Image (cartoon, one colour):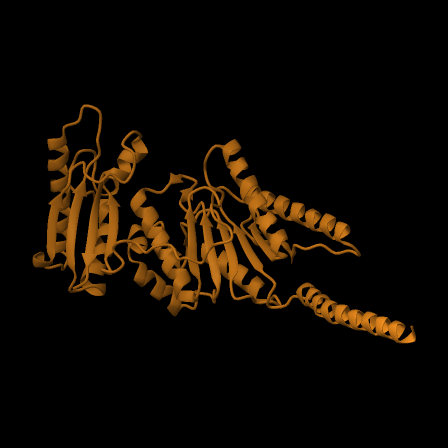
Length: 388
């Protein structure tokens, strides 16, 4: 009998030791996460200039995006940093904590976690609604400010989810993307930033850009949208991250799978594509260059003679569809305008042998011809520079 009791006691002791040995590491892991180990997921958010659109619909999208981020952050216990712009355009940190629960039992921990999630959701919505709707867009400063905040954290996971809300059309020095010449020449723009030390360390970032194509004056046309997307794709690729999502109005996939947005078609050819609106270059139905056209054409000629002195250059004219308009007349006007631009380049140092002139009439619209704004975008002269 005594032997059986001793055997039972021994078994109980062995079971107790086994349970102790299994629970200790779990407690240690919990402390490690709470104290900010390298396994703690990190989310960085920036809100900038608010996009245009119907206020009620925009509010629904903002609420849905905020809910998605808060839910995912709470699920993974992520540390979230939210930077937003005030009315004075000063960057401020509006949320900076780990979305997790504290307490003596699971019920209290869950309740606390949900409270933090609500606070995060409210902060995201508030930041987007409080952001200025007009004024200079300084995406680069916002990115650097966020990077400084993230680098100050004690935990640095292999990947960090980054969401940038608002216009991506940077128009503050040293990079003014509202200038079609700058936007069309991605390589030169990024080289300039690198020389000035303006490209921050973004290793491990999965970047989602939401509303980057929306501006206070309306959405960008399709060509400028692709150019803007390509510039940011290359920017984040150069600093060690990935642009994984490019959305005009809402957060589609969060967290990102880490698959980089596809490069633009002209990247492999290293082409520089500069669309100049006909309204900037010409009056009405005229093919005579306006005096004010010299500013953009001189800058373009400088690129063709100095930056890419041996490249072939196509100058293509395009027209817009108007009610009762003639396709033949539109084609003739597009040819005449393209010739005027080519002749300007020839007189400013670009050899005619490098120039190809073509009129494409109503082909390849970049915007809807159903609105005056769309027709203005479609009336253009596109300069395509292809290095040899």
